[in-house]
Length: 185
Image (cartoon, rainbow, N blue to C red; front, side, top):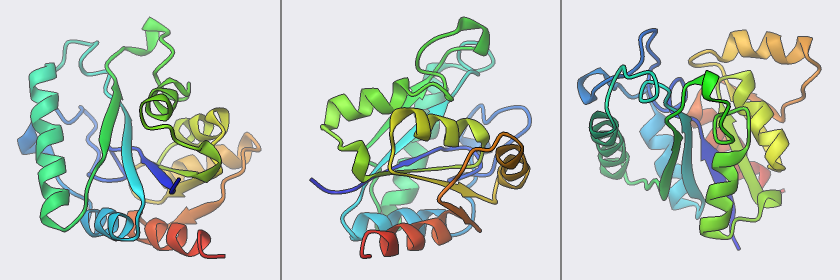
C-alpha cells in the first residue's frame, strides 16, 4: 500500500478569495501547485483533495458551479501531468455541526474507507489550523502547513495552541519535495 497525500484546496492549490470561489472563472492556481501535484503523482502518491465548501450550505453558490470548479482544477492538474484521485468536500455551514467539516476528520475517514488508506502512511497539506487539527485527529502520520493562503497566520495560531506540525513549507511545491524526501528516509 502506497502513500496518500490529502490536500486542502483554497490557499494550497488555488488562490483563496475573501468571498469564496463561486465559479470557475474565479479559480486561479497558485504558481507551481499543478507541478507539485504532478510531482507527487509521478512519484506514486495518491492525491486526494479534502475541502470545506460551505458556500453550498450558505446558498452562495451551487453544487453545479462547484462541480465545474473541480473539473477546471482536475483538468489543469492533468495538463501538467498530475492526477487528483478524488475530491471529498463538506457542503455544510459551520452552524450545521456536521462530522465532515474540518477540523473534524470525517472527510479523511470517508476517503480512508473508500480507498483503504493506511493513515500511518499519509500526509495532510493545508493552510489553516483546521487542516492541521483534522490531520492530527484523523491520525495522519504527517501534517504540513504551507505559507500560501492563510498559512502564515495559521503558523502563529498553531504555536499559541501548542499544536505541532511536521513541516512549514513555502508552497505546495516545497511541501511535495519535502514529502517525497520524507518517504525515502
